[in-house]
Length: 319
Image (cartoon, rainbow, N blue to C red; front, top):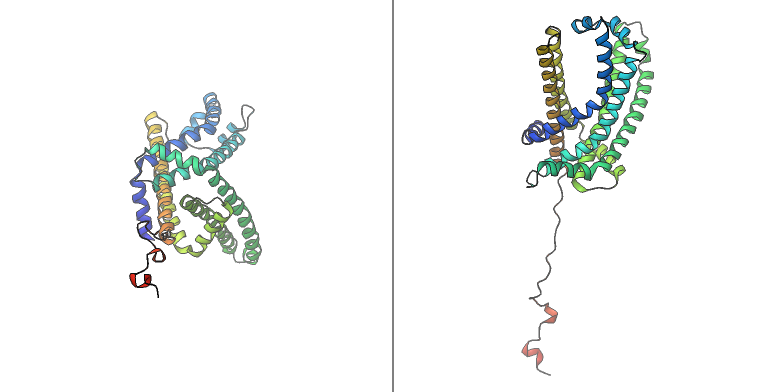
């Protein structure tokens, strides 16, 4: 497992253009829903005397008052923007993952990086998008079922007189639900990898194969995912630690430093995601190597079959 993680990091390091492209890709996509929110907040904070106070120190009461001004619900606008960003990310992830697999699988190809990325993204887009829909349906059904079962099972513990029981039952339920969701999302990755390897056209069969692959190799599959998730979590924790322990970004240099750190964290997370895809691809290839086809040698036209050879002189003598 460790070797696969290292191989994934090396694969991403050999393809820095992929990291920069996806960073720019998702940055531009995020601007689409973020622009109307930024414009509204700029108008509200610019005309409100409490805006300066919010910049120096967050105040929940002032924040809620600001979200109800100008006749527009700020929280509703933010929720709509987040929903739009999630929808865009769902659609674009199918294209981006196809480009990632194509670039990682064609490192010896002399054609340009952009040609290979967009070739893979366009070639696998509809198949990968259908797999994403299957995964989303599977996550919704499985997590709902698991949550209902665990709620019934944990009811005696959560309603017991033991005070930590309620929190323990909730923590167990959340952990199991997250693990269940991860199962279907990881199956999506390996199903896409299989489609990229063998060109499968049956997405239901490919997704079932991805689920089977994950279920048969749970420790390694989850170990790879947890390793890269830990890297991403560490980057977010570093950012939060910086934001918590420095003065509020009330000056342009402080704002620029905060934005720079944010983008470095985003860049690191993109690098970790590409590394994870590379590690998963290498693991899939080593666990299920492509069988070498056996080619039967065809007889050379210069060699006549035995039945066509002329008879020996003894056989030509009549009896």
